Image (cartoon, rainbow, N blue to C red):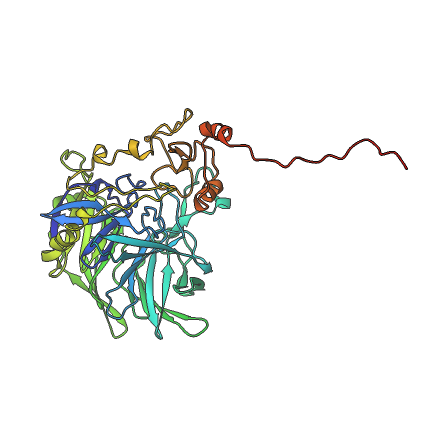
Length: 502
């Protein structure tokens, strides 16, 4: 295995422990920054640019039909394909922690959208689940199993917060291992079923999972209840029978015990396990190869790379799989390097021939056309997000972005407007990175902030969807004064005089 030092450049300060990487062909994408997305990239997903041993992150866009994907740390991520040739790759993302330290229970499907102008665009959709829905969690695993010509998604392990009715003031943010249940999800219908495994009694988090056909191997991991990293391997077999699936589990002995390791693969039957921890104070400095054959798994020691002094002396490290036998590793920096955009040192750990072509694959082909692409247009009524045009500069300068005073987002829309670019936070659920606005149809017209107009979210959506003319507080009286009163048919009032009797 070869270790390559990377120079941190633009936007790499966003890379924090718990991030994930997606790989579509030659394009690798970063996901899971610690804070909410910057205005320069409201989606929070960046294209990884490796060129001349320099690591950069370039913002990318999502299709207009995509749902919002919050930045999530320590989610469960796996790839799968609907085609036999494996070309049409999609990713499943479940759970994870938000920047507010809330834990998600949502399941997202991410794919690369075809584009006629060669612009790199991703598509994200949320999958609605019914039945036994897995509770919100992080540090767990997700795999796709194939059996009898069908496939299912398996979720296992992870941690979550103590239930609200069990929390105390002193331990409000305490976490516990989730129950060791296996969840199977039918992707087509979103039906989820829960299965108890008698062979697994303790919760497991931050483990390694390897799937092969109808079998998932759970390796390593940490249990909070007994503070152990078990050397056992749980071999879970899933038989997708018609009606109710059958799940069996065998316990295999293993000499390895670790947590938070990273697994990468070079072929369907060969996997490499790197990084992680052997105890709370000792990093796992050895590397291992996992070989699956004849319905069994075997481990071989792999000669580790020549670790740098910074890696050897660092107490912590983290990383993610880049695919094709490549892992991106990071360690805390000394915060003395003023020339770096990040507080971490980054390394590329490669196995096989991938290291010789990775830099070219992740930069040249994917970025040449991306920087010339046009930004997406705002919606006509709801101006929630607008992606900036790509730049060749190493750093993003907000002064170089579009003039938002002309776009109308941060103008003083009325005499009582108090929205500030530096203090604004989302008010409506549909807002991502800029305040919702509504168009005042007065003479000349102008945009106003929906929050300043005291509009409820239901009213805002109703005005937009039904294309109803709207007038702000300062023009509603004027508009009413200009309206021509409707002609009213005079009401015939009956006479109050009593007619004389004949």
